[in-house]
Image 1 (cartoon, rainbow, N blue to C red):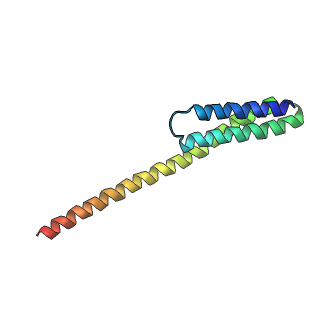
Image 2: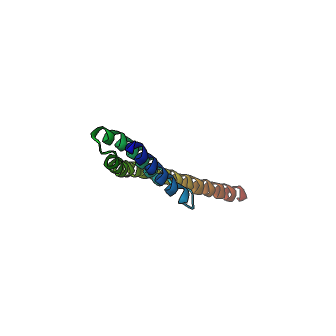
Amino acid sequence: MKARKSLVACVIAALMLLVGCSGPLTKREIGAGVGAAGGAAAGAIIGNQSGHSGAGAGIGGVLGGILGWILGDQLQGQDNEQERQRQEIERQRQEIEKLRRQQEGY
């Protein structure tokens, strides 16, 4: 019963944090939130077996949050790199179009 209450409290706290954010969440933030919630749930279940579901949920939440943040950071970095490449392609396309117009003028 204590494990269920701890898990519910962790889920409610995580949802309140996510809802409280004013702007759209980045992949880094989503990864940390999902990792923390998943880690807390897994920690509560594992901790329940040893009679320490609250400690298990806390430890699992922290570890899950850290791992989720790392994964989200990697995904965010990939998105940033793709956006940089997209901008470079657009810049080159505009340069080619400019050169094409100049060549037609001759």
